[in-house]
Image (cartoon, rainbow, N blue to C red; front, side):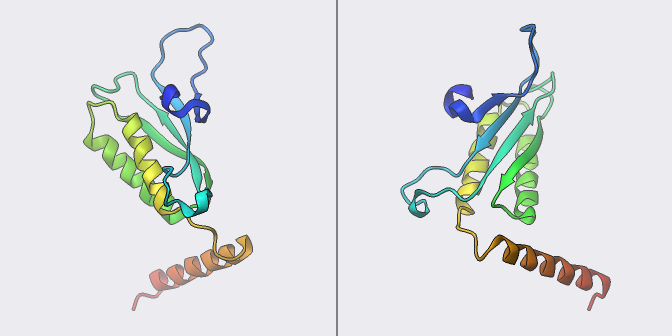
Length: 141
């Protein structure tokens, strides 16, 4: 992973004594690079924190966390987290960290769009959507 992601790879395990520990890494991920990327600009990114149990990959699945999220809605983050958890469970017994990274990068690629309006406008829209959803749940039609 370190050779693939270079400076975007960070070993989260504090291991001063060089004793073996299960994989615990943080990868800063951006959209898959492509000619069709909007003018080459990156509007979305996140850190994928993967902590594997001692039994990985034979029996355990890694604990997955999404951190330092930039430019992605909470709804999309929840969707991505669910997709990653499902993929990890379905591939139990296999080494899957690289595949999870690729899934995240493809997901980010699909959402790599410039923000619409100002940050404040986005906050107002999100607040209005939450209020609307709350009213619908409180007063079903």
